Each structure stands twice: as structure tokens, then as C-alpha cells.
Amino acid sequence: MSKIISLISGIIFGVGLAISNMINPAKVLGFLNFFDQWDPSLIFVMIGAILISAPFFFLFRNKSKPLFAETFSIPKIENIDSKLIVGSSLFGVGWGLVGFCPGPAIASLALANEYAIFFLISMFGGFFLTRLINYK
Amino acid sequence: MNIINFTPLSAFVGGITIGLAVVVFFIGNGRLAGISSITDNFLTSKEGRGDNFLFLVGLVVGSIIFSFSTTNEIPFLITNSLPLIIAGGLLVGIGTKVASGCTSGHGICGIARLSLRSVIATVLFMVTAILTVAIMGIK
Image (tube, rainbow over all chains, first blue to last red; front, top):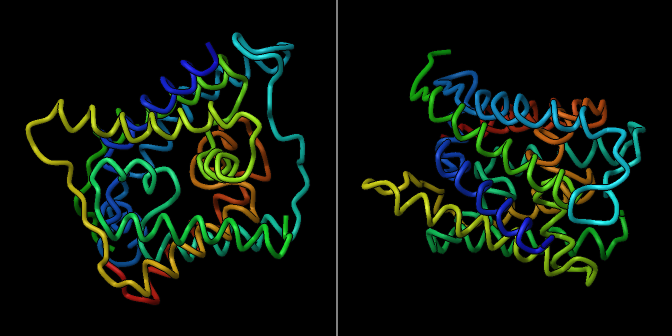
């Protein structure tokens, strides 16, 4: 059952990225182009997603297990460390260079765009490189 | 600053849809729909690989389903500069791995869970992304 839930969650997420057009790097760059010609749409994506999910995180905070798995796998760390600061800042620079973050980059495989695929391969390279220097 | 191309309705509906996916994954499997972590775990860990794979397949299938439901093509425009693509991909990979999260993990799930870590991460990557676009003149 957990496999079906995973697939369904992914599908719903992918539909959401397509509806909001966040799958489109040009749309995302429009949001990031804050000082010139600004497209605030992404804010509304985040507000919609947070409005729906926050009550459920709250309601389930004391439940011992989810419906179809043995345990909740939620990160326990709460400290603000240099990894969080450096990592998020670097991620932002990469996001601003192309307008792609991981979700849309994967979802855009649906469009079979060669540059999107080059981006994905580079992103995988970034994961491996980080593992290699054991920064995490 | 001028406001252009603003599509609040489709953005909000898309956001609600994404929120639903986060809810289903959380109450069903007890997991956060943070896509950088799901992708990295799929690539490097045997644990839960089937679930991670199916979630990622779902992302692609969801986009295809939406494209069939509309008569217009999904608008999509990406730079054709390979140096930008490679630098961007590497930085997104390194940054999200080091920070343990991206737009979905920190920006949506983390904020919805009222995690201070995620609020700080989101402010930081928004600021550096906006500065990058401003400095590089990327459009």
C-alpha cells in the first residue's frame, strides 16, 4: 500500500507543478526577477500548499504511526548550523541561474527537453560530489 | 518593480494541489515530500528505493496527465546556455544536499511544520536567488 501512496502522492504533486506552471523555469525566473519585472505567482503556490498541509502536520503531531507505514520519518534536527546557511545560499544561487529546483527538474522529464536533462545530470553530480567530500 | 505575468488563481490552485500531495504522503507513509531528499535517497540508498522511485515517476506522470487535460502546450522555457545549466545544476545539487532540503522540503513542508530551520533556509535561498537574477541580469 505504501508504494501506491508514494505513486499517488508523486502524481498529485506533478499535477500541481504543471497547473501552477512552476515546472517552467521562465515562470520561476519571473518570480525571482523581483527588482525589475516581478511575477509574484510563486508566493501563491507556497501559500496554497502550506494552507492545506499545515493543519494536517498539526493534527498528526502526536500520532504514533502513519496509516500505511510503521513510523513517521521526520527530521529531528532543529539547530541552525553552517551547513543549513551555506547549503541554502548555494542552492539559491543555482536556482537563480536557471530557474529550476529539484521538483520541477524531475517533473519536466515529461517534456523531454535536452537542457532540462543536462540540468538533472548536473544536479545528480552535485549530490554525488557532496557525498564524496562527505559534507553530509 | 513592475508586476507582470501574474497568475494568482492557477498558482493558488496548483499550490493547493501540491499541498494535497504533501498531506497524502505524510498521513499515508509518514514522510515529507521533500524532492531533493527523495531524489538523493533514490540514487544512493537501497532503503525505501521503491517508494522513492514511484514518487519520482509520479511527478513525471502527473505532468503528463495535466498536459493531456489541456489543449494548450505547457509553457516551458529554459536557458540554452550549457555553462549556466551545468553550474546551476551542480549548485542546486550541492546546496540542497548540504542544507538537507529544497523548495519543497524546506519551503513547503518545513514552513508548514513551523520549523525555524526551514524558515531560515527558505529566506536564504530566496534572497540569494533574487540577488543572482538581479546581478546576472537573468530573465
